[in-house]
Amino acid sequence: MEESSTDQPPVLCETPQSQKKRIDDLCASFETKYKKKPLFVARASGRVNLIGEHIDYCGYSVLPMAIEQDIIMAVATNDNTELHLSNINLKFNDFVTSVTSFSIVQSKPEWHNYILCGIRGIIERAGMTDAPQGMSIMVDGNIPNSAGLSSSSALVCCAGLATMQANGLAFSKTELADICMRCEHYIGTQGGGMDQSICFLAKAGTAKHIEFNPIRAHDVSLPEGVTFVVANSCVELQKASTSHFNIRVVECRLASQILAKSKGLEWRKMRRLADVEKALGVSLSDMEELVGQLLHPKSYTKEEVCGILGVSQDELNSESLSPNTLHVQYFKLHNRAKHVFSEANRVLKFKALCKDSGAEDTAQLLGDLMNDSHASCRDLYECSCPELDELVEVCKRAGALGSRLTGAGWAGCTVSMVPTDALQAFLKQVEDEFYAKDPNRRSKVTESLFATQPGRGAVIYQL
Ligand code: NG1
Ligand code: MG
Image (cartoon, rainbow, N blue to C red):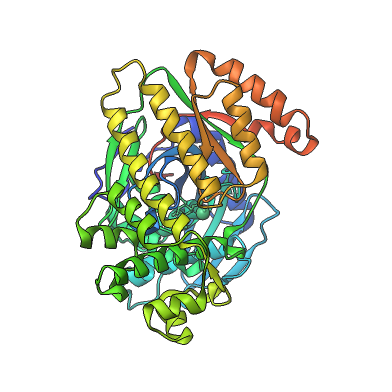
């Protein structure tokens, strides 16, 4: 299927055969619910991040690919300004509001809040002076929830795309990625732009190396003879209802500001670790060394941070913390920064190896980088959990050349790189050793353990 370039809007196309039944069913539910036909269906996929975890919001590049699992939304406009949201899955309650005034809930947000983020993002970027189109929307999704496969951003991006189309607007894929990256912050987590970027910029058959500020995506051909396999630990965590994520964002920000201050830079302007590296003009390895010299491994107390930066607690709260981290008293700066600089380096090495993938040991070297990434997430960033660590070990025993948690972590999925000729044996062994023993895991194995290929970016299906 045709794909447009990144400075063009996502393509409008016919429904592909592979999605026909699902889209027909979605449209039938839409008609039953709203007593009219939808105008179009927007689609946005989930993603698996191959390497580069918790570094996008520090300004560093990442290496994800889109997966087949997605969110689809059937959409019709209406003549008033009402917004009606329903989901095929009845566990997600209907929601009705007005497109001209709505609020987004941040703590324990229900599903529809992610849709509201996407709608608000487009309305604001377009600077709409007239009232936006009211919409009726029916959603179907098959991305495992709260599992590190970006079900949240797929909802945000799909809603952004639908709102653009319903209002006759046209933003390029890169602009859409930027809009959706920013508007997902309305949910309260201060993530980077990986998920929204891959959602719009993905291309079937290729992974992407994504850089930020501004967003740019480059094709990365994965080596032949290996297959990437996603395995869900079956532990769920809704990131937006805890402060784990923002604590890491804030620790990285404080590490940047203290490193900057120690080097005589204007620390208030250094909000990301990449800003400091850029200002100093040194390498990632040099930055790792600087972390060892300038930050101590012991936690910093809030008073200590204030003392170093020369600010009051109130100033620190408004300058560097997020609303859901104001209560935090201890910050681990050394280990977080060490993870970020080493992980940023691993992404560049991974990309370089994929480019010259002729050598016999390429696959094993890629696997080693994935294993090192997991160890760093587990030990330095502390974003793993016992079940993810267990699953990674099972995958390695079952023949993976590399295995790591993917996405934000603390729950959710791993990604493993497996020699294609050993794929079936791998799947069987992981099923036996991780899923078969536990009734909850066993009941979910089909949607939890699957091989995946790089999928396409967001698209609108004409009906
Ligand atoms: P998930 O796993 O989808 O919550 C989050 C962030 C990413 C990135 C990863 C960790 C959002 C929308 N997504 O992804 O930007 O920081 O964690 O690498 O905040
Ligand atoms: Mg998410």
